[in-house]
Length: 464
Image (cartoon, rainbow, N blue to C red):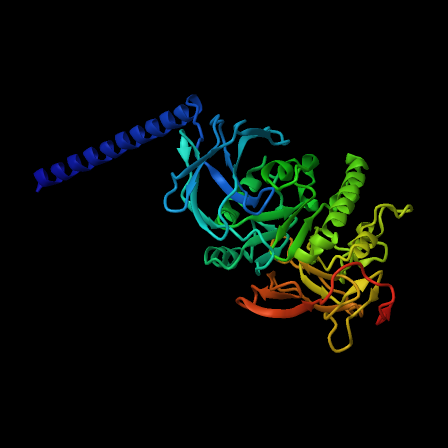
C-alpha cells in the first residue's frame, strides 16, 4: 500500500512538472512569435476590394482594386471562355494613397480598363500581378444602343454597421437581376475612420456586389474628411473629374451623377460649384440635342442631399430655401432646380435622409401632376425620389406629423429602390422593404410620350 502511495505521488509530481515545463515552452514560443512579428516585414500583395465601373462607354469596364503594398504592376486577365484570353495592364501601375489620419496608413489603388468589349456578353476575370491574384469573378456587358431595358438597384447611406440591404443586394446581383448599381452617397460611416480601416472593410463587403456589376456612385457628406480624399481615390467614375460629376448612357436613359456637397463644404472654395454648374449645363445641352434626346429621351440625375424632404430632423431639405435647389445663400447663384427644369430632367434621385419618400411631380413647391387620375403620366415637372434607407448605425429618420401635400408616399423601412427603364416612354420604380422580408412597399410608373423642357403653361395642382 505504501509503495502504491509513493508511486502515485511520484506520478503526480512528474505530471505537474511536465505541465509547468510545457507552459513555459508555450509562453516562450508566443513571445518569440510576437518578437518575429515586430522583426519581420509582412507584405500584402493580395488584391482586395475589387469593384467595377463603366468607363467612357458602357463597353469599357474599369476594374479597380487595392493592395496594401506596392506590386508595381496592375494586371487584369479576362475572357469569355477562359480568363487568359486577354490581358489588360495599367501603363502607370498602381497609385499610392495615404490616409489623412494619424497613422498615415498607405495602400495602393489599381485601375485597369477592359476596352471595347463585346455587347451582351459574359466575361470572367481576375486581377492582380505576378505577386498575387484575386479570385475569379464575372460580369455581363450591356448593349451600347438605346433600344433595350436596363435594370438598376438604387440606394444611399449604407454603412459597415447595420447594412440592412446588403444581403438582398448581394444575392440579387449575383443572380443577374441588375445591369448597374447607383450608390447615391454616404459610404461605410465613414471611410476615413480608424485610419481608413472602416473604408477598407466597407469595400470588402460590397465587393460581393461591385465585382459583378458596375457600381456607380456619387459623393455624400460622410465623405468630406481630408477633402473627400477617400472617395476621390477609391472610386473610378468616367469623365476625369475626381468622380464628382459625370454622366453615362444606359439603354434609353442618360444618367447624370453630381456632387451636392460642393454647396455645403465651401471651405474648399467656390470654384468646384462654378465648375460643376458649368459642366452640368454643357452636359444637359448635349443630352437635349434633338438627335440625342430621340435616342435617349430620359434624363435622370442622382445627387446625395435632396431638394425636398418631409423629415423632422432639421435638415435643410425640409426648409423652403434648400441651398442645392436655390443656390448660394443671399445670391441664388448656381441653383440646380431651375437648371434641371429648363432642360427637362425627368427624374431626380436622392438619398441622405434615412428613409424612402416619393414626391408628386414638382417645381418650386408647386405640384404639376399629369392629371388628377394619372399624376405620373406626362407630368409637368421632375419626379423626386429619396432612397437613403440601405442601413447604417445612425438609424432611421423621423417624418413630420403632418405631411406636406407634395409628398405622395413615405416609409421608414430599411430598403432600396429598383428601376427598370422599359423603353422611351415607360419607367418603372419599386421600393423594396428589408424590414418586410423583401416585400415591395411602393411601386409606380412614370410615363412620358414627349420629352424636353417643361412648359410653364402646365396646370398647377398645389401652390404652397
